[in-house]
Image (tube, rainbow, N blue to C red; front, side, top):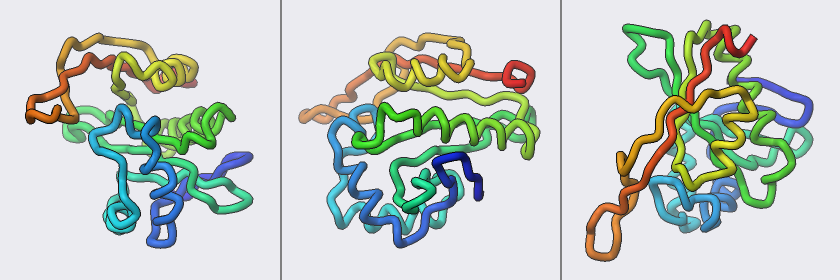
Length: 177
């Protein structure tokens, strides 16, 4: 994937992205709703190798500096039945509030609906992750469901699941255009 917007370049990860990846995956506020804990520098270096071999992760870079400020997640769900994709996003706390996430997700959606002929795009987020669900709604996603204690991503000190509620959002191709 190589997509440019006015301010951003979306591309796949490479091994040179480790420091930037570490910068945001080591931020407590950034990973609060993610299925992993804060990354150490060593873990980030291993993760960048994993991501550079996984087309599900898309690096979001500042166009002028090639600095990775976040990532998008993209996967096809049940490709045999419908052309549906699931997306997600994580952004460096220092670059939140400037419209980068909406610009990146908008570019990804344009790409999915035009080049990949997506029929439907879904996204899920923790009900407490207000910034994420507001962004989805701003981009035209419909909230289709509230799921009660349907997921856990982490466990407490005793090893018991920490359950949370999630919203499911969706956007159809005809709703985008």
